[in-house]
Length: 98
Image (tube, rainbow, N blue to C red; front, side, top):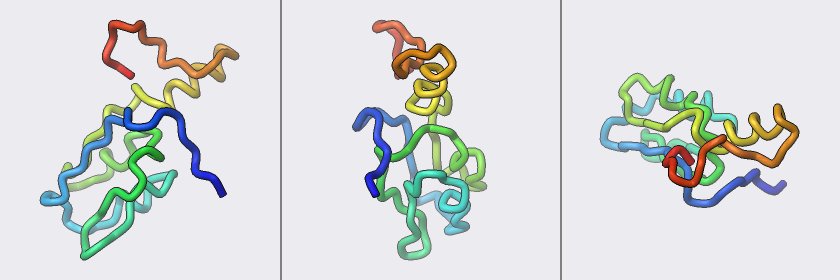
């Protein structure tokens, strides 16, 4: 099955492996299987699959993950559906939200 993609190399997802305690919460809450466990730590295997929902960051007890939820693909898709238009996060070209 093909993996969902919106725009490559634009996701705001950041991960600090040194802070990871190996709890695997990010794996449990990520709807797009962005993470795997490797050597008792999470590892990003598919960064472009991230829809920036923020579930991983909100559930990481060590704050090893950051993501600007609400500025990326998920928001653009939702706004497009609500407005019956192409996906758009509502930013103008001068904004850095996308």
